[in-house]
Length: 262
Image (cartoon, rainbow, N blue to C red; front, side, top):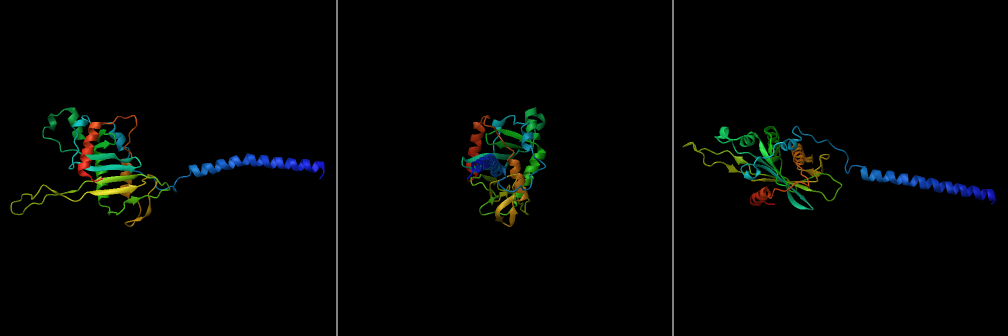
């Protein structure tokens, strides 16, 4: 080959290598962005609730005397735990409030603030907040709707491409039935009886995903009431900077160890 042909081929080879070196990083970047920024599952319905931000509203009204609060089975609305690689931990508990006492008109402003609330929420660090009457009504309504869902042998599992997921464990207390009166004297036979408590497990809950891993009890998606309720419970947050209230947590631990089989 002539000297000019060799030079031409060398120049073309250098240009080809330069183009390859310039294009390959861009190709890799595009591949990396695609594999790491794409959603784990296809976009689904957007979660919403008429009482969203209920917990933020509760933050405005902390319980004035949290150590006087005593959890009872009669006032329990719902208690939720998270089951992850960190173990089973309390997420949130909802309680109704006892009926106002006859001397409530003579009570101080702190007692009256409690009596005007709809209920209380206890978070995973033992912080106790008051829930507005409207928010508590919405939460209680969802709990009753969830109570009526069919029982599942293995819980509800949402579709996810992540292998290490968290289980949400919900416990609904036994439902008290009205007292039955005897026809002879009109007095009740008992103060009320209870049906069995309900335990619900939901795996890999996500506000952006409603599709189930496989059809469950005739449902292909997480039931609406359960999806909304879990989204609301997920609003309960805390910071690592927050201090634990060990007094309240000890009460809760004693309460759920006696009442709830984990």
